[in-house]
Each structure stands twice: as structure tokens, then as C-alpha cells.
Length: 430
Image 1 (spheres, rainbow, N blue to C red):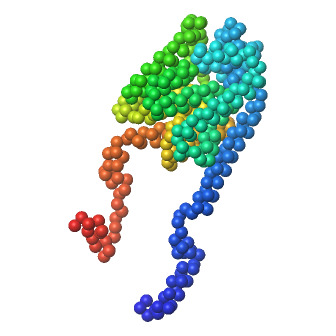
Image 2 (image 1 turned 135 degrees about the vertical axis):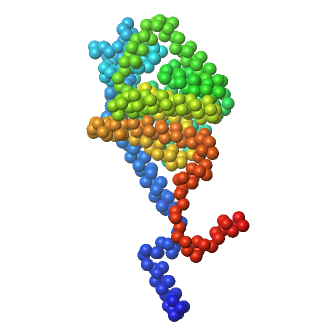
């Protein structure tokens, strides 16, 4: 190389830089330019819009069908006729969505559904649908007001692509007022008004008794000011059917719910459903109990912040089940909108956005597909749980030098003259 002239050397360097393989490195452009970022955002928005359009098309196929609203009205009509409100009567209109999918809500719901039977079912369907969407919009607006950093198109499209929303809308479920209550409790806790937050949680428990686990978890975390009002309100509301109809209506409800055989249905996001899909119910029950006890330990041991304690409690309810329909995942919306979206959170949200119509088609595609993919919503909740628990794992456990040494074993280096020289770090130590 000593015989090469400066001019010829410059020519070689110029020729090397002009080769296609090295042109980009010669420019030294930033990894993510504004046009590329714009293209990526447009691609994400397009995918979210396609997801929403698929869900809208699926909901449109249920035109004039009552679905679960029919089951609710069937229960109210049976009670009005003096029959068991938790029974199935093929001659009584309106009919439920199926003979196996009857009203599983507690007796307090029967009186509300009885009052609805005086309206035309088709008109009631339209009102029910519009009211559910309006209440969902109000809940989202309240959360975006509380978390202004989430006010952007991507977040808004993500929220409206969540499976829980379209599952609620398609089946005409009663989750919208419950979501409003959860959001209200969340915002009241942020303001320090814990007792009023407990009142709203008590309303949720009265309609969905499996959420009675929430105040018990909150008690373990030391938030009696939330838990006690919740239990008192739920107990007061639940006493009304006992006063009106006595214990018989609760016995009828228990006979139906304890004999319910739809735990393995695709929309169930509980861990018990995972065991049912595997054909090993004991595995699902073991997973559900273990995760619930683990969350209880975290609540008692680390005493998380009140909003985190509430989130952990809701996750425990969803994962324990035994029946946690996809619409229950909407109750995690305050948690999703209150946090930064890292990779783990994004994967969890993506799992909760897979359209249920696709999941149902997969369930019909074969036993192995149903076994592997049907618990997708449960895994989404598990990932959100893992992300929250990472905040409470001791730093010593996450960042221990011994663990780093195990995971990052140094490669054997060849002994070269450069390697024998002292490194910058050793020079600084010296």
C-alpha cells in the first residue's frame, strides 16, 4: 500500500463509496426518518381501521337479532308470568339466544329486565345498542380527559378496535354501565375520594357477583376505605330480592349458574377455560387458583398504589373466572389508557384486539386450533398482569449481577496484541 499514490487512493475510496452496497452507510442517515415514521403510522392506522370495519360487518350480520338481550327479556317475561326467571320456556317470547345461554345475572337484574318487557323488542334493541355505544364513548372521553397524552388518533382507533367493545355490542350485553362505574371509581380514586369509589364498585358487584373478589383484594392491600363501602352497597342491593321474593329466587339462580356448562366457550377469558380447551380442567383450575393467590400475595406484601391495587383485583377476577366473557376485558381500559405503551403492553393490547368473529371461525377450524388460539384473550390479560407486576418485582431480583452474568456469558476471546492492552475501563480504575 506504500506504493499507492494519494490520487489513486482517493479514487479507490470514491469508487468504494459509490457502490450500492455501501451507499447508505456513506450517507449515515438516521434510522427512522420523518417519511418512514409517517408511513409506519399510516400502516398502523390502516390495520386498525380494517379491524374496526371487520367488527362492524360482524355486528351488522346480527341485524334484528336480540342475542343475549333476548335471554334477559326471556328471564323478565318468565318472572312476569309467575315462572322461574332462570328457566327456559320455548313458548314464551322473546326467546333466549339458546336454551343453554340463559340469563346468568343475579336476581336483582330480573326486576330490571321485567320492566323492559313492556317495550317492543326490536325498538328496545336499537335503544340498547345506542345507549351502550354512548356510555362507552362517555367512558373513553372521561379517561382521555384525565390522560391528555393519550389524545391521538392511534389511541382512539386502538380503543375502538378492542374486542370487548364489539363483543358487548354484538351480543347486546350490559357491560356499558358497569364500565362507566369502573371508570368513575378509577377517577374518584385519583381524586382521593375513596369511599365514593367503593360505592360504584359495590354497584358492579351487585350486578356481577364474581367481582366480590375486588374488595377482598383491596382489603389485603390495606384499602378498607374503598372495600368496606363496596361490600356494604353490594350487600344492600343484593338484599332487595330476598325482601321481595325470599331465598327461592336465589336458589333458582344458583341452580342455573352452578350447572352452567359453557366454560369452554371461545369468548371466555378465564384461566379455567384454558384447562377446558386442553381437555384437562384440573390444569385450568390450578392455574386460576395459583394466579389469584399470587395476586393476593402481591397485594398483601407490596401494598401497591390504589389504582394498581384495583387493576390487580380486576385482573384476578377475569383470570379466575370461571366465566369471564371478552367484554370483561373492557374493565381494564382505565389501566391501558393510564400507562405508557411499551412492547409488552402493545403485544397484550394486540391480543385483546383480535376480532371475535375470527376467533369463532378458528374455533370451528379444528380442535387443535381451538386449543391453541381460543385462550388468546386470557393470554392478553396475563401479559398485562405481567407488565404491572414488573413494577413491584424487587430491583435486586431484576438487576442482580449474578443473573446478568448467567444471561450474558462472556465469549472466549483470542489473545491479540490489541487484547493485551489495558482497556479504557481498566485504565480508569488504575
